[in-house]
Length: 385
Image (cartoon, one colour):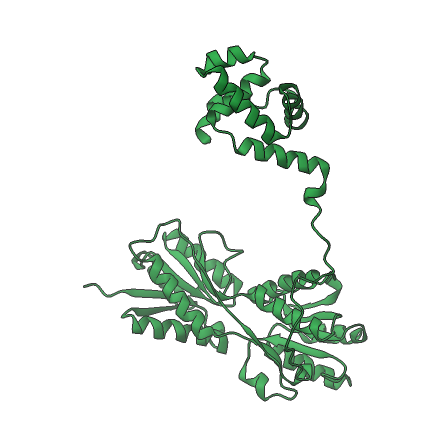
């Protein structure tokens, strides 16, 4: 029996971090339990790897956008599907599978926690412009703040590309405008708080600080960092199971899976240790109701859509002839249906459209779908229904 091999593509810089080393450990341990040999392919060896010998799926894990996009391109060229471990698949295409913490959900949890602590003036500091994870969290934070009826603008975000310290310094010039800061990871939070200390800004007395990752260093730092914890071993484990499913005989080539591993908040000293037993839910009462269906024009179009979507092929042929001006007798003859059947269909059609007569029905359709007969091609399109 041929040995099953699992290719895992990673870059060495990312693998040196706790997060991605735990992911790789989770993949390796689960593969071993299932009798599968993990084949590591690093950025240093990817150019010489024979992708044609890979099975029909491989795992990619990395924090580097250039590496991930390059790996996905190589795998696509080899007709090999990609499973991302620790990364969301949203921006890479609907053929990509993933096992990941929900960075959107965990960012929403963190924003929700800060708002429940009464911290509504939130800044994002130390987010890397070229980091996949930071970009996900940056946009998720924008959405999460909007849920509370607030706005987080570009002026509330301090990004960096080569060195984060200038972004810290720029923020500290206006720090009195804010009462909380979210950093993208615990190391960045420590760097930021050290900069605050040097400028006489106290955490948490003057400023709450929270981040992501639950790194060991954040637990021993003072003040200890409030953080979102992610079990990256479980992420690696789930990535393996996605890979195993995709390489199984029951998997369709069109299948892409997304497994989300839950995260939770660890409240520590950088937010004054404030544990919120009961938090106001994310759907805040300040949001206004959706007025979409209250608009009269939209309501009419929704009614027309409901009416048309419930019609079968014969009904649509009837409508076409109605709009062409044929008499009921002519419609019955052309479609080989009785007059009573036609009347039954028309009465139901008019009721669904909210009208009482043929004239009202025709006027409704022409007013909203176009003056010419919008059902003129219905015979040709009947097969689509």
